[in-house]
Image 1 (cartoon, rainbow, N blue to C red):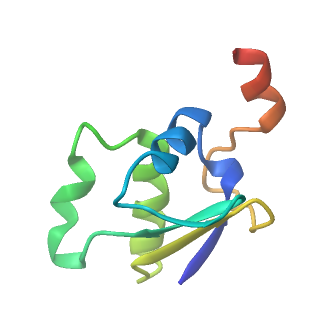
Image 2: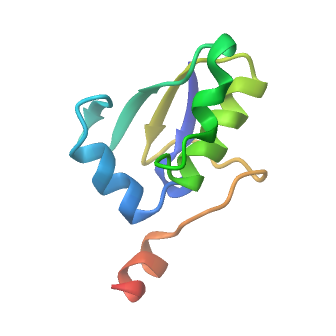
Length: 92
């Protein structure tokens, strides 16, 4: 399982995770996400999949990991975009 900071997710994606039964809430501060099986990488090209989630799942796949844990205190990966809380608050 790969742990990533929730800062890699946009507010829109976070809201989608909160309202989608395919994702598993970790707590009030994160989610567990099961990535596509290596044989089903075509799922990453689904246009309904947000770009930030696609990037995180692609990164996890490159690490040979299918489970992602997003946590507010999780590590930040420099290769992935950051969507800071302050920026999200300003955008609304």
